[in-house]
Picture 1 (cartoon, rainbow, N blue to C red):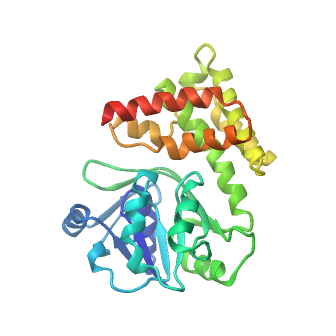
Picture 2 (spheres, rainbow, N blue to C red):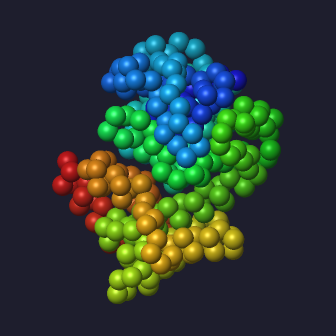
Length: 305
């Protein structure tokens, strides 16, 4: 299976790099500056599972000449339009697109651009970043990709993709409930991003502050209410894990959006929080805490511009 990984940032660089290390046929679609960096230094991964430097196959958008079997889409939401435009030549009649973005709004955009029949549901679990040298740095041991057909079937193409991804140094899960799992992750990540960015600190510091526990759980309740109204209430095991992570005393846990703000980088405010608000308000759900969070994030974005 020929795999095109769109971008070689923290997520695409890690999972794509592990696939290259495992001998898979992987090509990275990158911008000129990143291409120059990778040709000079290689794709460097620093990880609890072992460091590696790779020499990956690279393409620029104008060099795409034929379809790939699988397009692994790992961009941030604010780069989605550009990413969709860049992969058009790579998407043929049998191409499957596997997006690893948080939230769900990207599914509608990809369906409209390429047809719903080509787009799987998907998500990943990893804490990683690019350092100042452009190296992929994995911050914690967890690394997994979960994906599946949105109608819940375990199709032959999902099974084929699972076989391609397995054995490359990360967990692979072919799911028959991928939309449920995407909603559960969205509830967790939106709550974590919302509270840590608004309070400018990790979970443990918020928990130790007056009103902190109540605020965290209040945001979680709003996110859960929106998910329930959409028909995907978090299941008991997922909700228990989420509550435990979000209320652990002394926890250093923050969201990647928090780290992006610290770095002065773009963020996914509307994709992660704004879309939740819109879905909640369409169902007459009060999401006052999410509104405060979005106002805060939008203010950051305006100041950054």
